[in-house]
Length: 140
Image (cartoon, rainbow, N blue to C red; front, side):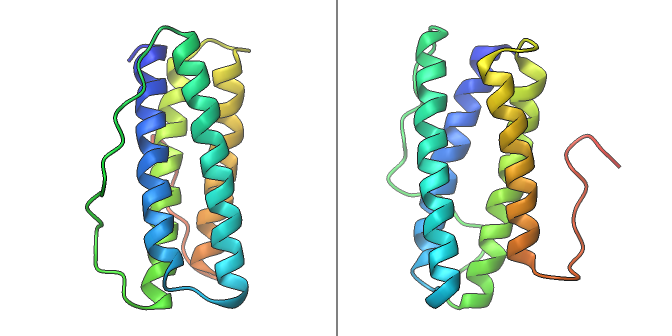
């Protein structure tokens, strides 16, 4: 996968995550709603930065869909949290691909490494204390 392809996939992943957080956020209140809104801001900012990097690399931004298929119905705070954890898991995959597809010390690689850590930590936060943490893509 080329760097441009990895950037395009990363943008597409963030577009889906932003949609998913919108759905999940509608079922969260209080502190969890604030956590979701903060995560949504992070993802929007990251998407915008990825779009800048993609454009600078000569790529074209993937068209954002009006809606995305969710892995399950989100109707309660519990499954909203589960969705947020899955969204972050998806980010780890996209960040891993971006790390592998870009040059060392490039702005895209630096962003990807930070994104990978952020997504893993945020997924663990959504799962809660004591929950099993899945392996990162490509790792046992």
